[in-house]
Length: 235
Ligand code: PGA
Image (cartoon, rainbow, N blue to C red):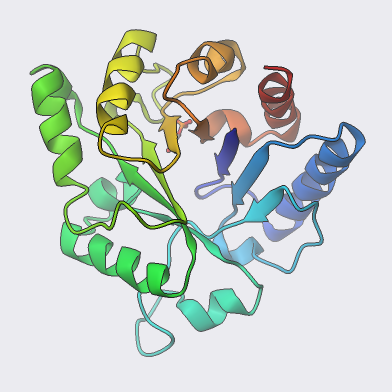
């Protein structure tokens, strides 16, 4: 089971460190074997000494070793911290930051060549969901165009745009039917993301084709995230 936390634009360097110290202690004390991925903001990246089951990743990076890309970080800057995990195609980057499919595919291929673990996000907006499952699948599969689905370090996160940060998760039925349709073409682990919280986590993790979750809001407070890790561990 994979439990991932996306800090987005939250936590400082200091509070991220405090968070990780507490989480690491909890994982160690309770012999937690679940895979935990944490995506802090880039100002809080570091060579943290953590249990093997906790990996730090970047929320974004430019597909370059180094160069002139003001405001971006590239492979050299991430590699300094021994980081080998990246989120690609998160809906906030696609929709708020207007990242194109072309750039997203380029990032995917660049970090695949560096053997990174890639959490690749897909998900439809509300108007597509309203048109029914067939359109939802068409939309999600179009976001996988150009992506090598057989890459061994790929994790696909299905995150419907309308469920992200809204407090309203997709229904169990929506998640179930979407993940089971994706599963037919994707052998990689499948995560669900979008308003996952302590109250709905167990139900979501029990879905047959769900291999884990990507959590935003509900993971930013460490006690809450520890509770979620505990729920996953006890399943
Ligand atoms: P949320 O965010 O849990 O706040 O809905 C999920 C995500 O963006 O990955």
